Length: 178
Image (cartoon, rainbow, N blue to C red; front, top):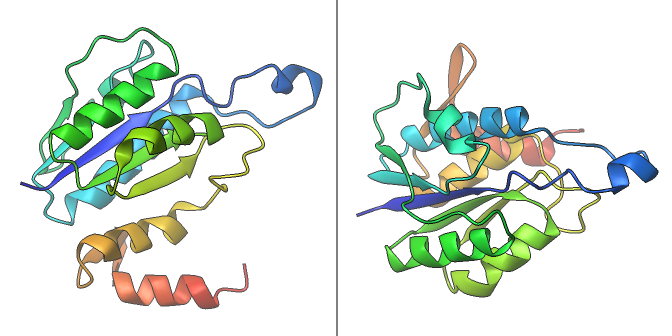
């Protein structure tokens, strides 16, 4: 069974640097939108199941609300303590359940926690932290095709009202002047 885990950190991008150094921020509503975009991308791949880490804000809950996709999506059953260890425990549990990829919305700290327990499971980091060293901020059309290509090189990804082959998008992204 193919399983993808999504770990959205509701606390990333909200530390004191926003107040004292004019650092950029990332609100949880935007994280909901990112998760929705990721779920739509995953849906074209034929993945059998997606699990999302629960959190007090409800990022996964809001992302699934009125989202019409064929892939079954559920919240991971786990107790939430609102600590950095939630991401680590979720990643460990998802890996134990057979996750073949972990999508992580967070910054350096969140990804460090996940990397400590992910073993050989690939991690797709999406930057939602502050002044990250890793992951770097990326525009979805650049990372989504690459993630899809890992799963299914012949996939077609919907882009607005069009669709394009993953290989074409990935090649275009590499040669883009942006």
